[in-house]
Length: 265
Image (cartoon, rainbow, N blue to C red; front, side, top):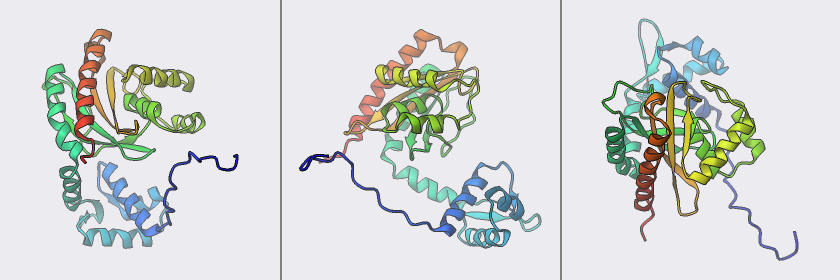
């Protein structure tokens, strides 16, 4: 670099020191959150490659804090209601959640689809912050708080389109994804580029066979994606014309939401 040139590198990220006990506790909470049934110490320790005694000590602390409960008879662990109060606090303080819920309700009612407000939690994951279901006989197995790899489905194409990761980084993470109808990376890249040009993304039968998912981005003042509006319905009810109209409606709503979320001076 020539002397005096201005570096375009962004601010350095804070150095993170490993805190094993915290990481293990979070891993246990996530495992219990994804398990349909309570789990014993041995099952938890095996799944997370933990020493059983260490696992037990962490579980006892989580139980004492009201985040995990244990059945006295079976000695199996599950998430406790303390997790609900934490989640409720996050949702209630989220400006996005408050603003997006009436939008999702209107879209779900108008189009007969399931709608979601999704936040990019990190480069690795996205999380559903708000949800609305239509009265149509269709529903997805998703709830508020559901967490997914950030590159899956229609939202994943948008995160790739408006993100800052290299093709090599994207390809490495793409190969770890699971699809209902798999596709190769070059095909996915073309769909990412198309999503950028159109300003919305469509996943037809790829992530879930028989389901079409439409997503539009919410961008901050720097042009970076922070959230998406997502609509999902049966593919047989969402032909190309209806998808285009739905995407247009969602883009208008996303534009209004993005303006409302701008920081006030």
